[in-house]
Amino acid sequence: MADEIQLLSEHIANQIAAGEVVQRPSSAVKELLENAIDAGATEIQLIIKDAGKELIQVTDNGKGMSPTDARMSFERHATSKIRNIEDLFKIRTMGFRGEALASIAAVAQVEMKTRQGISETGTRIVIEGTEVKSQEPCAFNPGTTIMVKNLFYNVPARRNFLKSNTTEYRNILDEFTRVALAHPQITFRLWNNGAEQYRLDGDTLKARIVGLLGNTYEKNLVPVEQETDILKINGFVGKPQASTRTRGMQFFFINGRFIRNSYLNHAVIQAYEGLIEKDSFPFYVLFLEIDPAKVDVNVHPTKQEVKFEDDRLMYTYLMAAVKHSLARYNIAPSLDFTLNAEIQQMPAVRMPFTEQQQEETRKGYLFNTFSDKGQAHAIERNDSLKHWKALYEIAQTPTAANIASNVPVEAEQTQVQSTILSGSQTEGKGKGSMMLVHGNMLAATVKSGMMLIHIRRAQERICYERLLREWNNESAASQRILFPASYELAPQDALLLQEALPDLVRMGFDISPFGKNSFVVQGVPPGLQAGDEKNVLDEVVEQLKHESPDAIGRRTDMLLANMARRLSTNIQAVLQPEGQQALIDELFACSQPELTPDGRKTFVMLRKEELEQMLG
Image 1 (tube, one colour):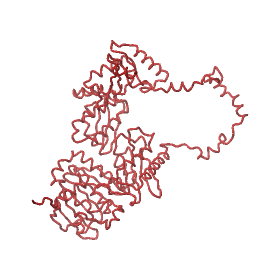
Image 2 (cartoon, one colour):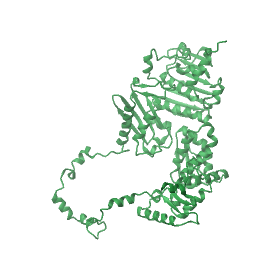
Image 3 (tube, helix red, strand yellow):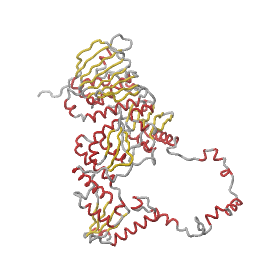
Image 4 (cartoon, one colour):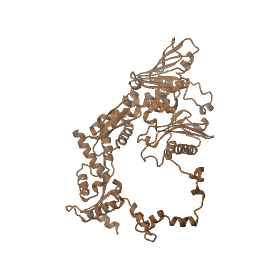
């Protein structure tokens, strides 16, 4: 019987290894940019065509390579940084020239031109699918240029799995943003399909953040600086008003390398506790410097996931540093009068309140105004307030009116109580009695028992089906807003919103591009609360970020469901029996009354037998 196990050829082995490092065009961009930084470049230019599928070109003014090093950089396991196993845990650079070039050359047509400053001529190498086509001297400026053409030309299956040009270019922008943020002192240029997208001169970190992500961050940045024996933290966090409902504007750098770490992210979120809404995400660009021996960066091939020697200590230091910065700049003020010497020296603090002073105060006009009967603000000096606790508890009881409006508490209670009484005593055309429960549910009796309806979810289903009808008939109305709102996004998010504009217009938004990465909103769907358009658009962008390739056809459902959720907040509509009956009628006129668009129950039925069984 013939032997079946064989060694893979070097060509196939290289292609398999390339899949671990070069998963998409952005992977190649990341590796080439990091190589340029390791070469000591102060100016880096990135040129992209067809979202990186046709061309990725990186040019730097770094130290260049000798002819031998240029050839060796395309060999697997070639490195200038590691000599023994201990060196693996002490790497402070981004990478090394040969780390990914072999993988890139295995799945693309690569041309490199490089020259060292001390050399009179440079070297030009052309490689296709690991095969060296030519190597020759050439005239070239000091530095290196690498052109990656026709990525995955020899692996058609992998090329077919690439997503749309918009998505792939977004991923390239993500990598470019991370590298440019990590090195604000380096000048960067980015060209896409012949148009210059970025011209970032070497500057401070704050200027780099504004240049990359937009002017909205200029006045919303809070500096963070903290240094301990173990950890050094510096960078910026955003003020609470700069938080958004989209992820992606959170950047951690460990020793200059971008990382993802949900544990550290949670530490920053905790520092904002009570300052931002539950579903919002703060902005931050934070650099953590730590002994390389205390962090393992080789957990994942892309080196974006790391492990720390002491996670809990990192968590505590980071949360404390962010909290301290927010308090220091009066974002989260912490009042401690004992630390203020001026307050401590005031007479009201230093001098005791003697009995004589108390007696003089009682005789004063102000005291009598508030304590004598017949005055506007009289306070009864007897037991009339001994039941204050019960009164307080009644006043604090949540009601539907309290949820929906700012009506005074006494008026709310009267209104809700009358609603409950009238609802419980009215049969409503023989369809059973109704009653509000806890302000957000509606109980209605039916022949077979009782039905409990979740008001907001029912409104969500009703609103969704109305929006769907308008969408299909292309009859959605748009309500003009008094003051048009400007809406600026990060470049990669602006690409997503631009792609979804036709759908948003069809839903009733009047929104159009307004300059680079900015949009102006002049109209919204009827019923949307003033100022809520930013939250809606944030949620749309966040959902588009996580949209799977086969979900394009379901984008309509996603957008309509999101809008229905936003419009289903009218508790006032069911405070009267007529509104309650209308809610029930509209819900059961829907094609799918049992569930919300995202599959949550709108009501439950309790049969009479079940109720009797509950009562024994």
